[in-house]
Amino acid sequence: MKTKISTLLLLFISLSLFAQENWETLEKENYAISYPTDWISSEKKPQPSMQFLLLSDEKSQNEDKFRENINLTLENLNGQTLSLDEYSKISIDQITAQIPSAKVISVDTIKLNGWEAKAAIWSADFGNGMILKFKQVFLLYSGTAYVLTFSSTTAEFDTYIQVGDQILNSFKLAK
Image 1 (cartoon, rainbow, N blue to C red):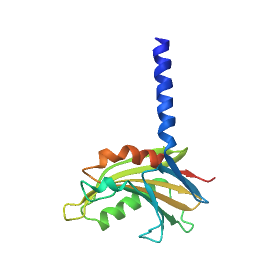
Image 2: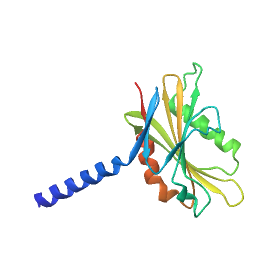
Image 3: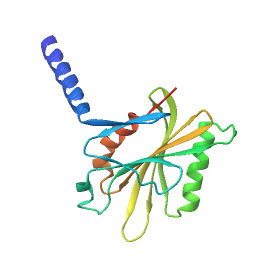
Image 4: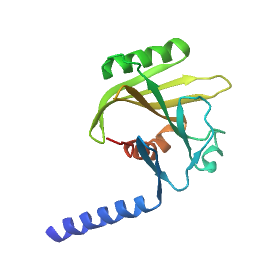
């Protein structure tokens, strides 16, 4: 029995190490994030507050014409002393006010590399049959709100959330 457990443990560790070999790391002064080599880091920033945009393999859009992605936006809190609960509630309230079709699915407190964070999952219908689903992670540090967003179609969310979570969970702040 011990041999079987040892063998399974060794196999699991080997697979975990192998899986991480094909990853790249985007490092900036204040943070780092890792992503699979079949994803790309794009310099296109649709918003000035966006720090990066990671795009899934182009093949991800074959079925639904949408390329799964992860981005990071930063918001300077300008000295406001908001709790994580307050900030995430304000953010979610803004989403539902600005996007009438938005439906909040869950909001949970999580740990992200030792930091307390909030994770919200929500979806919205953007018309033309484009229903998107998001996982947003809110983190407050040193007067700045860090908002990581994984975006997918609802049809492919379950297919991509595992790698999305691996990418999100790799996010590290420089202390």
